[in-house]
Length: 202
Image (tube, rainbow, N blue to C red):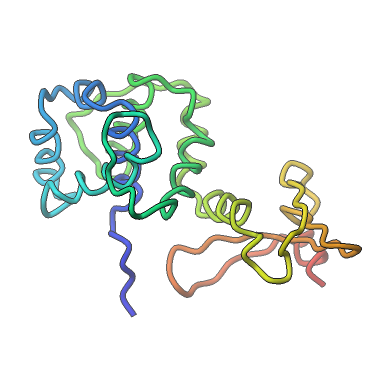
């Protein structure tokens, strides 16, 4: 079964977030004056087939920002976990800093040579974290665990920093459940457990 996810969804999410949050100031960081020319740039790079793909991603992020556009408000919180993922790493970046992160992604993943970008080491570390499926999966679980019958009305505690073989503890009535969350990029795949995680799972 083919996934509905665009093959370049990571960069599209970064672009949609940047456009929704910073609007025209974001496109200026790339040397463009209009959104249309900015959208077409990604067609020229071969990242999307049409500029409307980039515009659609902006529309998906628009409802989460005060920018005067409604975007695809009908979608509700469908994309909130993607916004939360980007927020968790880059929420404090100004437009220049955020644009540099997008440029770093373009240079690193798509080998765009005519982009020059300098970022601080901590930003490079956050950038690497963005590319791990685990963080996205953890944030999704953190915001949706209540929809799982076993955890309904439970109280969740974040244990990721403790390195004790599980990510979250969920207390439901008198029971405590430990959850180790793993992300995979496709509908099926493999994941690894550390020895500590394996012992906790047993």
